[in-house]
Length: 575
Image 1 (tube, rainbow, N blue to C red):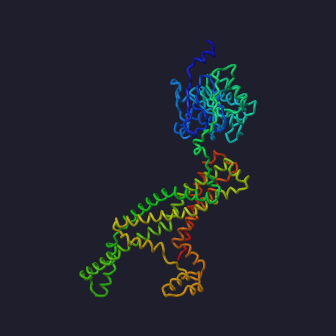
Image 2 (cartoon, helix red, strand yellow):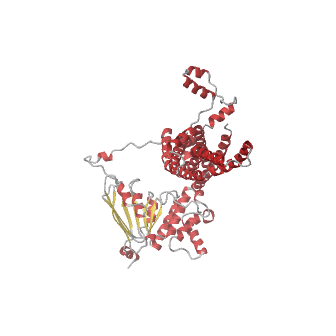
Image 3 (tube, rainbow, N blue to C red):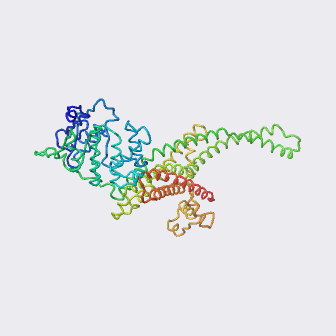
């Protein structure tokens, strides 16, 4: 029996059949059948967008029945030779070049060899195999094997990708436009290598190519068997017009083209996706701090220390006044009772006020904006840095420049506008949640009542602004004065000093304004750092995108902490 006859009698590696299930189906064939024999080659032909890559991706195991069903394709049969392990079935040369960015060309080929199940036994044999595979696709081993994917041209990267597929020793290789980017001589070398592995390894090929002369070389009708051409036909319109509504073109979305669209998208992303994280963090902080504060205040008992001080200080005075050698025990008992009663009347209220003021000052003036900023440094700063760095690595920013569009206007402006709205809103929401749960914990521990706590919190968060114009306005309101008189006597100095600097400190450190200023400043720092880091390298590569994200988050967080220290120093200047 001749080799050709043995090939014809061999059992197929794969039997596949898909049918047209609806008008969404990209091809018009009622069904498409593919049978791959050992060493055979099926050329899948048809116009662009007709479904060749869709079917090939499914055969490679990179798609599912449901994915094809959404495109109107029903898979009837997909049976692999049961003797083949799943790991040895199919390799893919993707239409878009796919290499591991962190490895050199030789490193990529090496891991492909190791995963093939038939890796070279020695380092010397491995190096010889890598050299042969690299050179078989038209690359120079000495010059190109040490390069990383980002250092390769488009054609060189495609050749390296093909070398990976040749190294895997799969029983089937899907070749999706494998000759794109190759000159004719290199493409012919690749075609001869594919014929060799068909004949020597009995590897079957599923070939998609729009280069018929090179595809014919791969088919090599004279020296190989099992060559089949499957053509996908375009769908035909129903002559009766049925299904015309489904075939009717819909207007494509242009959302994102305008600055306002991008602003809305950013605002939705920054606020809604950050809200659960911020809310739960503030709830946890509010509960933890209020429980700790309540427990400490409940444990503090000043009665005995005060009575000791009274006994120590009052007895000598009584001796001096009465002239007696010893203070009257009845008198001392009455004094102690009076002092104890006074403490019982004043200490609980003081504790309640101290608890409320501590919670309000802590979250409104100090940690509220800081907690939000540190969370958003990762959530917003990392997200924005990743977006800009990806645009930088994929030449999108260069494209914007060629279109006459400022890349910063495209990305940074909507991000800043959304950030200065989302950050204060998230900070205020988180602070309110923390203070609300403080109002639940305090009464539970017996430190305060809810209404009294909320009243103290409001007083601490919204104190009167001590500016002369504001004081005069309040007096005019209470005395029934006119607005004209108020406007004619505007004075922006503080009520306790003639210095405008003191007035500035009084206004800026007003709790609510201070709260909002810190929030806005922190998010501006975060986005400025992300913008700077992501655009630092004009030739940024995909491999460096994670580093840009990490650098943005770390540097942004550190600068926020430093800025928070500066705000604390400013707060100390408030009189």
